[in-house]
Length: 276
Image (tube, rainbow, N blue to C red; front, side, top):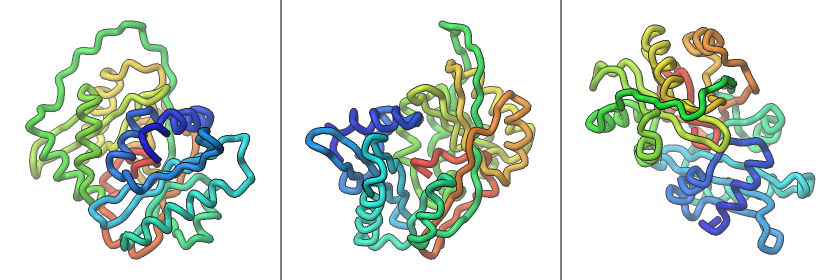
């Protein structure tokens, strides 16, 4: 995949009802210029898959998309095979992905096993057009602290990716506490049709409620998405209390040793199934 294929990728995720933008596709290409693949008919992109390596500790597979007119031809399976062969050739020991219920049996046949469950929550609301959002931003000096803490939570460094989110969506970047007393942090991004909250970490219910309220105040979109861990009691309590409803389940899966699982018990929500 190259930059010229980005519009084709956006076309496919739009057809699928996914929220990615051209900026998201560019993040894949910047992070993994040799690890993203397309299937084409002529000049038309009819299938995609992306991969991301995190410190060579583990790699992520995402954006397995096929044009509806070209499904049931084995394109998705072929793209997935390319991605796995590419990552195996790099020597990365662990592969991860977030699977839909439909895709889970396929991944199990390829040696992936379940790690934990995720639920996508959607909020649909009416936001006044032209609403001015005035909220203090997370100080730039705090970002290194947040990124260092996230490395422990996620299991690997993804600072380049999170910095790009902070640069594009500074108003959606939140932090509570400092250094070893980090009580919570969150990032957000402006998607194709919704604002997406994640990753989102909160150490206690009061911090979690405050952060969600702050994020919803900062967001100006009618739709907000959160991919929450099913095991997070905090998320399962405060999301429905704020009008969110469950849209679909996902299963985090991995193939390999999973030597760097991070601390998922500390998370309310992941960054997203395409990024981990």
